Length: 476
Image (cartoon, rainbow, N blue to C red; front, top):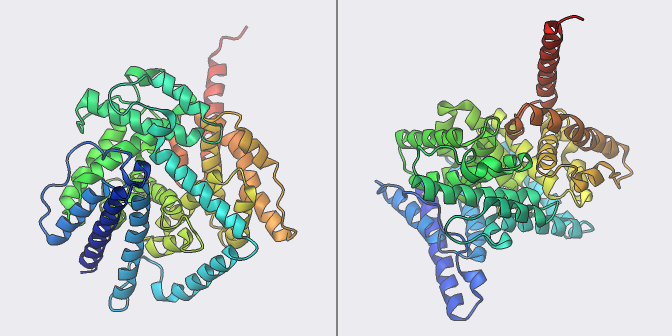
């Protein structure tokens, strides 16, 4: 019943926003604001949904495809708030979702949110405004990447030329420009070379992709995952059967495996969580439940992507209105997913705000002590910094980040910055990225795991191979 009510309300919101956008067109609002900039993902839509809820959900998704950026952002935020509001009402009379006590945690969540709101209108107002500006800038950069670097709207294009263009936008922006290019290239190749077949192979291996520079591979694969995700998820609605969800998820995993280079498939798999949580919020619970049985490793990648989505989702861009950390508490189905979500939020918060370290220092002040022994902040910082260094070797922003000294005079904050930020950034630069790159295992940063333990295992294997090689050499 809660899904039916939330879906009906979302349908009404979508139709209202579309009507407002239509009026804006008549009034002469510039086309950049009222026309969709990106076509929907290729491939089939969901088959005729069997219930009214499914039909309304499908109609809502088709309406979304016509939104310009303002309407799309408003819908994504409003849709999530509607769902959370419906959940709150139903939680009064039924068992709340998630593993944490909903009502027991609510007072603390309200206090935390009130503190954020107070800080946003107090002395830290410029800090939160800068964070929102940073987040929206990256959101739009990825979403409208073809326009940013001038990719043709149809047909094949010279991948090598546009790789150079993506890297010319800026050393900080490289990560997202390459991810956006990977999205467009994979989607275009999937259409032109494979007719959107779920049995496609070699997209990031063959053809023009064979000559991709190593530094582009991590985010090109992440972009490919975005392309597959937005198309595959179109085949599902909130009333899809478990069997149909399982079939679609297996097709997605097969696409990622068959089109990724060794050591990069996890970069693509993680995108499903980002696309589902950010653009298809009502589908999260259904997909994660089935995925946990289909492929537990892909399930972990899914929640890492969902953590990134919590940070980038329009519903949380203005964190003083709704903190992504509170959303993680409400949505995680178990403790493992909760930790992965928090690491994913940190991943995004760290790399997006790296040019203004005081933003992340504020996060350390608020959450560092609570997360110190969970390892979530430290791992998210390490993983996203490793990604940044892999995409942009000798990254100047990362180097400046390493030199940052906290402005706080509180020794606890200074100590937390050293442990949770400076140390993992240093290890990312000097240990994690070099060894993961050598072993072609960059997709391991798209999972929540102990990167030091992984590096230890890889170094041990290197020493073992080196010892065997020396033992086999003829003695002089």
